[in-house]
Image (cartoon, rainbow, N blue to C red):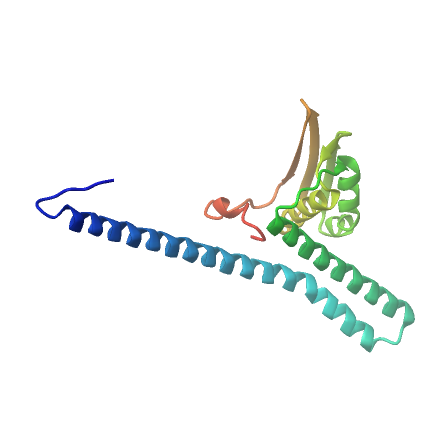
Length: 205
């Protein structure tokens, strides 16, 4: 673009170029600042998630060191190993997300629901939470462990929302038009409207 003004068009053009350069630098700085802010937020969330996963590892390992009962010792180490495996799985998910990895494996919805509830049904029963399943046979293109993680988190959140009072947890799925929908509903306190915009943020609780 040629700019002319008065008797010195070159001076005005130089000023415009300088201004454009400054704007580009400011834009680059803003983008870097936004990336750093996002990285800081993500790092805090990841640290919180790993803290939750690794706390049982330490607790079970400490218990195993103190007990002389072989059966309890074996159970504690088994639970520690399972918690460590979950942490490793989350690490792989984060790496896959960062690399943009894609996985076209398939998951049987009833199988994933069943495997997810196996580790949670005892706690639900203990808290007087009735479980209703309306799961249709269906297969979805999604890695089974990722679907398991989503369902696990939703059930945990539902249980926490109903603690201290009897409630009902409903899991239903429907398959139609080559799509599968999964719904997890509870009779708990609900989500604070102020938190709704953040519910899809990674690791947000």
